[in-house]
Image (cartoon, rainbow, N blue to C red):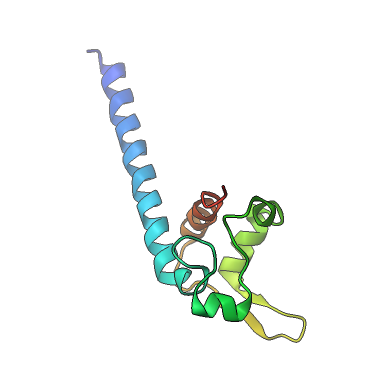
Length: 111
């Protein structure tokens, strides 16, 4: 095996490892920061989710109703209604990359 092939394999393996780690981190972060309301399945059928009227993230129409940038901003800054009442707290302690991974993770709920 030549040096270029070895380098390519090492880089590919590193990227795959990082991708798998991000996927695992996103699931863990979702379960820690979001599942209380959204449920581990994204359907929002938790006690808190039902109280707040959480939308079903498995519904394709719900998914089409928001852009990744909007989801990112909601996770990073939280959501408030017109009367400035908090609807969703900001996810604390997450980097921008972790928030992007969370947005991607929520997209995977779509049926």
